[in-house]
Image (cartoon, rainbow, N blue to C red; front, side, top):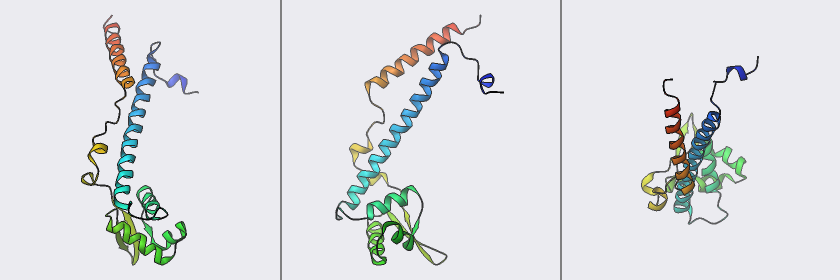
Amino acid sequence: MTAEPLQPQLWPGERAIVSARTLRASATRLADLVVKARRRAALMDAQLGHLRASARAPQVWIVLAAFAPLGLDQMASAFGISRRGTYAIRDALVAARMARRETVKGKVLLVAEEPRRERLSAPLDQAPALSHPALAEFDAAMTDIDQLLARTSGPG
């Protein structure tokens, strides 16, 4: 048995419409992720911009935010820094309110803090996720197609 018999029966062209809607939803999610990444980058620049260009605190914060809390030993081995360097990174991230120090079962962990809206600049905060004219045309075309399908799929 193959998956083809189990697929819904669609009218000619309807599969393309379903695919277009799915593609639009994916593009919207990706655009939202881009906006979120821009906000996080702006936050990181505002909070850690005063550090040297070779500072590892931004790299550590990216790993903390993307994956999980790190112990100081893990941070030292993952980023190739000394134990004293881990303290400096921890202090910089805690001072910037981008991370917090926790103790779990006697082990010190550095945990990423979620960015807060009030810290972000207004232009990035109000940036529309999808404002391209082509997407407005796409929405209008999809509305026209929906209206056409509603007229042709009435009781017959």
